[in-house]
Length: 512
Image (cartoon, rainbow, N blue to C red):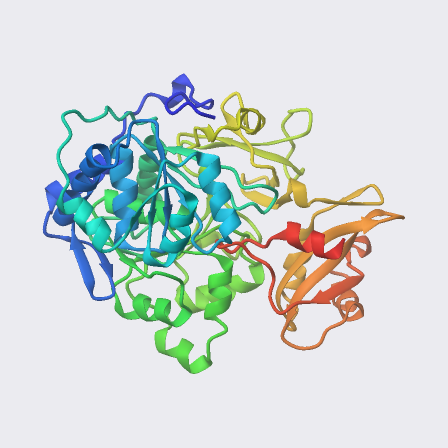
């Protein structure tokens, strides 16, 4: 998809609310309280007024010194830092979309992202500079070179007109089900996400502070920090997730909210008991937003006991759809393995293959539509057309909806296992396996079988020895016999992407 302002999912009913774009929202926050701290990282701080001035300088330099024009794409390869926020505010104000490159990716993966988006310019931190300079593109490295650029910025004679539907960023999908795709996100969608956060969660007001420790090159890792900044709140940045450092900031840093993935919780609860006791029940915490991968139900009682009963929100969202559903704190134990109900202004349907609507508790494909959806996949019109149907978006998740209207993600459509003609959803099996005391982490996939078409195989990180026969005994009576895997392979860790999702394609390839 190359159109920047006419998304395929744009309908008349979506266009009734005019919203600001990201840089304008930051300027407005700076106008209200210019001396207020916007960002903290270690001993460094940056006030809203200084942030707005630097964003303006970078925008001007992008146009006058770097030759950025409206419709360009630029890349960023960096860990979490102040400059990351400045780039995603300034370059779109110059008319360019910022493509997110995973700084922890292999060089061929990073090169493929830059090539796919056609980046004319790359911003890089010091750790990524050497690779960035091999790409043959113009490179600006954070540090002295970047500061000189800002100091010498000259105002352009004219500024581009920025529309709310214009592309803001292009994050890339995780690649768990195939080649990563660039997802074109508009200013409009990001600003409306901020409004949803303000109305739905605690911890997103002007007096709140969000802990930004998830990678900013991924959706929630950037979207939530930008949301609170646009609302006049502040962020504290960690360049990467560290379990004890995260707990320390939650306990003593006045943090009111953060975004976490299941792996984060598992790493935290692997800390020594004395360490956990030191940081339990952080008093200022209002909201934990959990997403990116299913949160095992077996983990939830411990999360609620440790962090508090009123803070956990489990979200269903995708880069393409934005925020879709939330399981609120009061329902975490009442609705097991559930992703809650839709956010305001979001509609969902669970459909059969023929497009008809499923009955209560019938499994089908989940479709949603709302005001925060993507514009389309970058330069992939056919895949955009498959994902968007008359304003409704599907990312291939299978779901069911109970009589109360709560949604349950059964599995990814591409992870469905068909054995002997019977549909089997691995996530159901994984939820049972997570309750086994010997299993620290687990994934179930389908592998080729000459007789049955596919058979089930377990890949597990174990706390103590365990056999497939042991698993069979444990699962008997908990799931149907045909759903009990007969194979188990122990691994030191499961392959995951930077956002914590298990790479089941890698597991299937390993088993082939």
